[in-house]
Image (tube, rainbow, N blue to C red; front, side, top):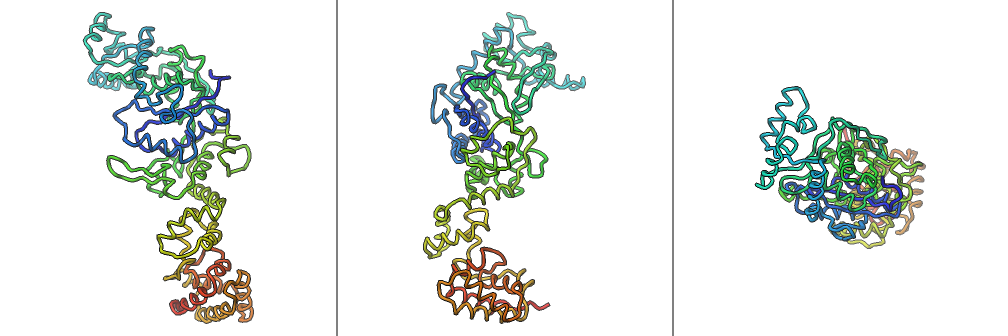
Length: 514
């Protein structure tokens, strides 16, 4: 195994479309282990399946990783001692390993047509057997194990189409240790003789993956649970190729589950429940369909990284907020769960809000300033930064400061009907006008405590409970029943705007008659 070697990990996506957020988590876990151990993070593009190649997908993958803060040490852009890092550019080197296995009697040529394979499947199904090209069924097929040697030679010389399949033993235990799942034991009687080299000369995922991991000196293969069924085959390939002593350690990560917990998180779940499943927005080049991304939805990259790290990994304490450096210091594969991790949208919102609150008002101003300008609000930087301070605890995204805080910049045009129905009484308008008169006597730059004192004094003198007038007062000023702290809000907006708003509201809002 790969003990006592410098840690080298790889994230090896296929450029067949946008990078799912589960793939980003896989890359993140690889990155955290590499950085913690002073190792190397490699990006390898596994594009052997040219039929599924999607233009723009590779660049999208790179941009997604960059956005969440994953730095690549070796890859298509960075280069490195094991270049090239795209499998399609490594194509000539794979075939020799498949041919070597044939020479050793550990693989064989298979000349079966699609029709031959279909007949085999039907024959096995009719016998109530699982259709598989394996140690039993291969002996009734057209391959170099069943055909005379001279016929095989003639077919190869004639250029007849063929694939190369691994020759698995009929009944043998394959055992390997998974860092997350413990010992995994599979019998070869349940495995297929998978294709290693396709008819077009391209390797399958299985051969290219193992060869590249060996040549790139990968010490840990950290990948999704969906690859666990392939691991026994890869172990056999390491054994057949004579590389078992340097085989990487495996760690198969738990699935990211739907919020309900039943099944893998998919794009359809995001569409249905209104959240992104991709790091960045993606436009399908064939259909033009646009899928939302975390970046465009207003999430901070640090919030997404923090959220993803905790979807499967459990720190030793109760800490939830981690910088990238803290994640690197504390991460361990041994604390990754085997069970699937449910995606929690409310937790995603929470993380983003926490990071929003950590930003300085100046940083948030820079984010929302284009939105403020687009609204046509003529206001100074200092004022907007004070709005940020009052609003950021009430919102989840920076853009919501503008969307939900319009009352800081303009007089409300409408008022929350539910508050009117619940709180407005016949005498409410008269109370509000009296309170407004008290506010008018304050200095232009009166502080929050001064507004609050005027309100309390009025309620006490009028014999009215403050709870009866507080929400109507907020509504008259902001049009909303909830929002930023009311006295700080009024102090910031200022006396000369507050008093006219209250007076206007009393002309627009009347006691709702039954």
